[in-house]
Structure formats: structure tokens, C-alpha cells
Length: 336
Image (cartoon, rainbow, N blue to C red; front, side, top):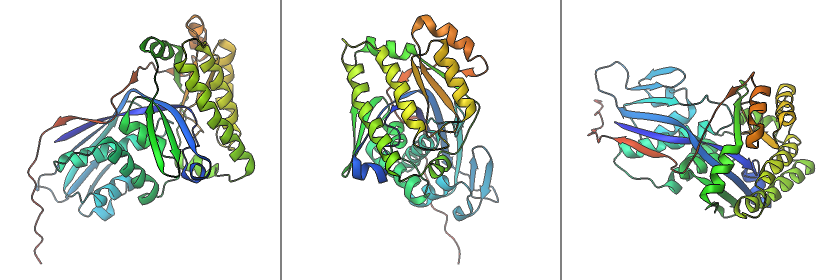
């Protein structure tokens, strides 16, 4: 039996510039962190006592005898890609899916990590990120960027740069005290609205000059935000003000990025004392994050009382195997 634990991520700056069509031409960069909310994938070989050979438990339960009939596209394609057979897979998570935290990519990374471990093989973080990108973007043909798979695999507070040759992961050099202060000043709320990121991306798929211009401006803010974090002489509150700027730019990149309800909640947070914030993920719903000075946080909590408040801590681990019990598996011989 294998159990993997894979973090979710929050992206602060540069989201959208990690889409291949954009960064191959213009370059891209994302500033993001993983935090202490996780998905767990439990995988073992299924005993041959049942009239089905594979059992999957996520938001629904599937029991099949043929991998090709699996409804979940990521599981089906991952099992075919790594030649997995006769397994029982269970998925659990600390937070809901389709909420802007890269949940589907965290699952993909955690699942691949578990599959390799069940085979008795080691896959490093780069391999897991690369194969999760290939799984979701190529095999499953889902629209989206590359940042989620990379963040889930590597973990930590990073700047991820994208270009014609691929990507590089650069840890943000920030003092422990400043990092703790940033963590304390961030507040996250669940809007209650969930959506498929790929559907939002499709609806907002605009190749117009205006959208590209907005993304270039968002890309430039990555440098500014990293400078705020790494230079102790700069007021950390500037990070919050930059969040407000990137959110205003993000809303201009597609008609389904925000909604009237999200705009109303965002305005409430700003009026209560938040210096800035953004909706996490592709847009359309999920989690709102605000940068709020300590003395204003009670006011923001009250203003956002209709939403669930989710406290969190940054994490640095990325995906990992937390339980490993090797299993002996012999493929079933099919009589012909």
C-alpha cells in the first residue's frame, strides 16, 4: 500500500503567463507558494476476489474490469501511461475540488507519485511535474497552464520562469521573519462557488492584442512583487497593493474571471481594510485571498462573515510518500 500527500498551491502573480501558447512567444513567470492543505492518494493492488479488477473512489466510486472504461480521464490515462492494472485507488482532500487551488494537478502529481512507488520506482520532482503536465495537457487535452503541476511537485515559495526551453523553479530568497509576516497578513475565504478551470480557460481563450498586453503587464508585476519580498527595506504592505493591481489586470483577460458576487465580496474586503487581494486560480469562483494588516483583520473577518475563513500556513515539502508498504504483484495470465 502507498499513500502520498500532495499540497495545494496559491498563485499570487503571473497566472496566465504559464500557458504554453503565451510563454513560448513572450516568456512567462509565476510567483506562488504551496500551503498546508493537501490531497491524499491511497493506492494498492486489488485482491483477486471480486468480479471487477479496478476500484476507484473519489467524488464517486467506479468498479471496472477494463481500464478503457474508466470514466475519470486523468486516472484512465495515467494507468495506461504507466501500465497500471488491478488497483484500488482512494482520493481524499482537505479542500474542495474546482476551487482555484490547483486541486486537479495536485491529484495528478500525487497519483503519479503513488503509481511509481507501487511499482517500486523513484520519480524525482522534475519527472513528476513533467509527466503531470503531459497527462493533463496532452493526454487529457485539458486547457490550462503548467504552474499547478510544478508547484504541487516541488512545494515551497517559488518563482517559476517559463520560456521556449521549458521552465525553471527558483526558490524566493526571503527571510524567515518576513515570510512569517507575509503569512500572517494573508487571509483566505471560500466563496462557495466551484468551477472547472479548463472550462473557464476555454471561455476566456482570447488571442486578442488586448489580452496579451494585460498578461505582459501581469508578468512585469512578478519582478516587482519578488523585489518587495526579498528587499527588507521595502514596506511589505506593498505586496498587498500589488495584489490589487494584478487582480484588476486579471479581470480584463476574460469575461468569466469574476462575477458580480465575487466583485461584491472583494469590495467588502477592501473597504474593511485589506490592501489588496485576488481570486485564486483561473477565475469564476473558489477562494479569495486578501492581504490585510494585523490591525484590520477583525474588520475584514466581520465584513466577510458570509464566507468561510480558512487559516493556513506556507509549506515547503511538495508531494511525498507518507506510507510505503511494498507489494509483490504478478500480472494475471489471461487464458486464450
